[in-house]
Length: 237
Image 1 (cartoon, one colour):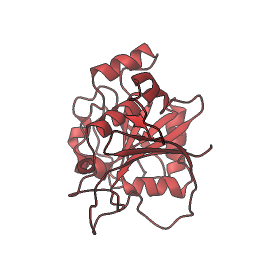
Image 2 (image 1 turned 180 degrees about the vertical axis):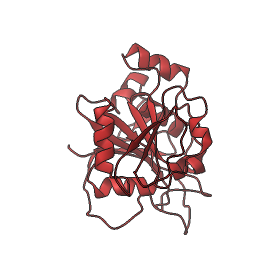
Image 3 (image 1 turned 90 degrees about the vertical axis):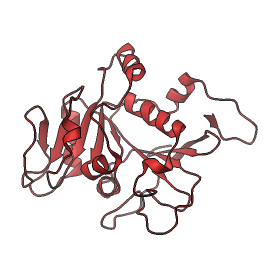
Image 4 (image 1 turned 180 degrees about the horizontal axis):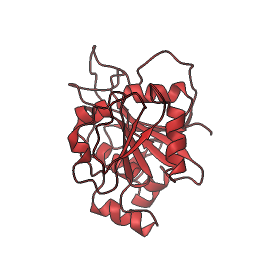
C-alpha cells in the first residue's frame, strides 16, 4: 500500500502503515467501512464482496490495535463473523506492545437475536450490548450490558465500554449502528475503503436510520493498493 501523491511513491513499510492508523492516548471511536464508487455499502448483499486482500489486511491492523471491536448483530449474521478476529501474528504484535492477546468482541442487538457462531469458542469473553426490554437468552459466559431501557443508547454504550478500560473502540458497522453513532456525535474517526466498483441501484449506503445533523471530518490521508482507495478522516485536523 502506498500514499497517493503527485510523485510516484514506494510501498509503505509495515511500521509506517501502522503509524498511519495509530492508537491514541485519549479515548477513540474509530469506524471502518467500505463503499463502492456509487455509494453502495454492499455488493450482492455483503460488504465483504467490495473488498480485497489489502482491505482485509488493513482490517486486521485496525483490529489488532483496538481494545474492543463493536459490530451490529445483523452485520455479524450477513458477513459470517466468527468469534476470533485476528490471527497469530496480530496476537503476537498485541502481546509485544503490552496489550491482551485478543481485543474484546462486542455485538449490538436490539432484539436479542445473536448468531450462535458469535459465542463459539471465543478467545476473549464476548460482550452483548443490548437494552433492558430485549430478550436476554444469552450464554452465561457472555458479558451482557444493558445500555438503555427500551433501546440501545450509543452514548451509554461508549461510557460502559470505557468503564471496563475499553477506550480504543473499533466499530465495523453496519449502517444502522453507524447511523446511531453519528446521531449521537460519537464518531472520532472514519476509515473508509473505496472499491473501484459501480454497484448499481438498490444497495444501502454506509449510514442508515433517521435523519441527523451533518458532521464534517478532516482528511488525514489517502492510501492505495493500486485498485482500492483507503481514506482516513478525523474529528480534529
